[in-house]
Image (cartoon, rainbow, N blue to C red; front, side):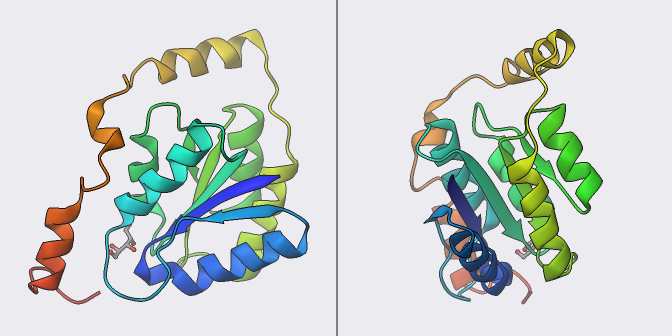
Length: 172
Ligand code: RB5
């Protein structure tokens, strides 16, 4: 499979570990960054990772920040993304099987690396059950977000990066 993956600066090590794990299992990885530990903003990478999934360039996506919350929310703002914040194997299975999640988010500072590997395995292995109920509900959810111009804007979060650079945020 082709997996789109992204993280913020808090979770770069975890993202690199997951990318290597996937490659060892024979998957192709599109690494959308971030690539180092310089402070940045999670929605940049949530959006980049999700865009590759929604466009069909990747089959599935994985997003990682400190808690997983921020980057999951960012990914879900891309029309067509169905990103589930996952902290356990049962949720990973449910998200794929019933909700056809095409991306999962995990918290690099919350969930241990062994459990993240198990979550990733289950997410990739589980098949979506396209029952009429599941499909109707997902269609309804998809239609909540209309495609918009901001989703194409590479500089959408520049002002936040500038704020980081000017010391506008407390250190994290
Ligand atoms: C750091 O920006 C931190 O807020 C982020 O990694 C994440 O935990 C947000 O949900």
